[in-house]
Image 1 (cartoon, rainbow, N blue to C red):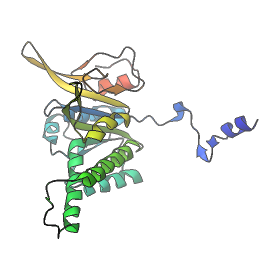
Image 2 (image 1 turned 90 degrees about the horizontal axis):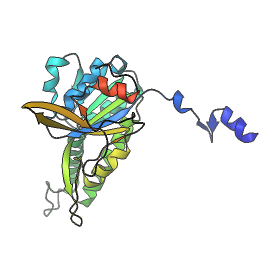
Image 3 (image 1 turned 45 degrees about the horizontal axis):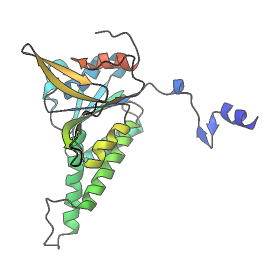
Image 4 (image 1 turned 180 degrees about the horizontal axis):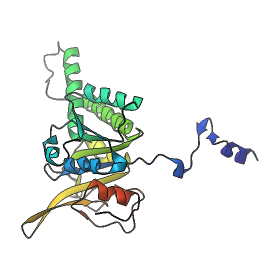
Length: 259
């Protein structure tokens, strides 16, 4: 019949139809937490996963010093403006680079870079407005900033490669209910939306037991913490102790863990 014939042609409405099993084996994730908990090192450990290398580390935060000892061969490019990030995306989109994984460290700083560019352009345009504070973005600037980051996150997410994002954490308190939520440190709209953009969102923190620090990842949402994992392994642990990307890769593809 017509319906069957259309589907067997693997196009529908002029668009290609794939089975899920035919999709490329890429994934994307966001890990967020306080400074110093190990987000950069965790993402850098992708270099130890053969299926994920080579790895390109886009250093927005200026915090790749921690990678020097353990992952000295990780390719790092330092960016200083939002335009730099756009240029790198354009090159990755073309595809002639050889990388299987890209890391953006961090979204929190990327949003700041976006705002710096917006405010600079705004002040040039409004140079004759004496009452305009150059350090105080208005509703229009925040709207443009939010949309820029929204588009950029989605664009990187859709690249044909593994994409790892980091972000700082922030605490938000609902004035009506008093409920406290820990989420990625982004503008109000984005901090709630970003979990919907990627496959996996995890909160990273440090727990001290008997004077020994352990890094933990929270892979599932709780009343307080934003987290999610599409196609999560069963059972999903309450927390992942001293995680590496090898451990996460094995969990993502439902393998027996090798660590």
